[in-house]
Length: 367
Image (cartoon, rainbow, N blue to C red; front, side, top):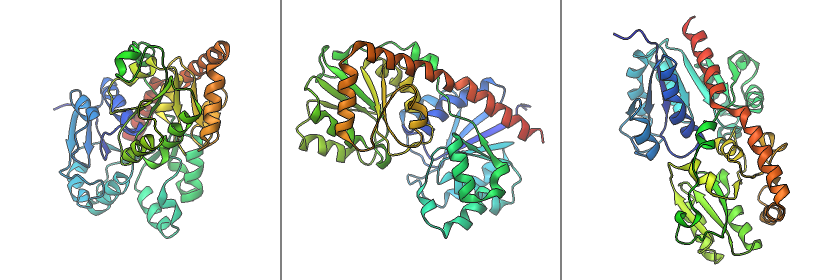
């Protein structure tokens, strides 16, 4: 029998979101650090990230298609008996695992990573009592920025303060820097080698606001085209907008991709138009690409971008187009921004994050 400490990570699925990509990237690295690491998904939805990860570690999946099936709680209970530590990501696994622990009386220590600066539950004051009970089931709550730590302390009260720990997310910078670009005219038949390409990598969810980037094309010349990588419930709305604006030849929907490092090396400008973020992995990937990075001036992005990349006013497609035009009008300015972005990205090396997580795991397991 192995004497390695067993750690189970729990997430709802492995889509293209930043948290899911982080899980896929980091879990094999914890195995390299000497832990026996497995993943439990609360839904049985196949994705490219899941297929890739289960070649490296054991992945369990509950037999549900909905993220919100409360029966997941009872399926989780047996897992609590088989691991030394459980690390939970996202909602509703935050609730499911905590409730499973309460019902089972398990003593296994839990960790939760808070990946976002906000959640809709905070709007309902009556939920605050329930939230305190849930969060108090966790030994540590990992906040990926100081801002998230501050928000949670204000929301949950000072009693939660000793549970909060700030560990910023990291990216495999070497993988990105060593990636080979794809010839532009090989990316899609709508693209020629002389086109200027913009890229946004994000799921089609309400906070990501791809519509602003699409609208910005109206103010830019025809040889500037937009690539959108990702899937999600709002993709059809974006496709409809593209058609309404007569931009079908200038906007390319790439879907879920496993070659994001190659993509970001192939385009001219990286954009993220989110309404809010935690610590966006897509933004760090954009910074490390060797290309200029432009983002909306919102919490979770402004802190990363303000001293290196370019910020535009949230939802202001004309402002975004103006910044893109300025960037493409000067080779010196373009290079200056690209160099600053790449330098800033070194602060978010995945190895820094891994070492901090390993230290946290060891301290909890050695208690």
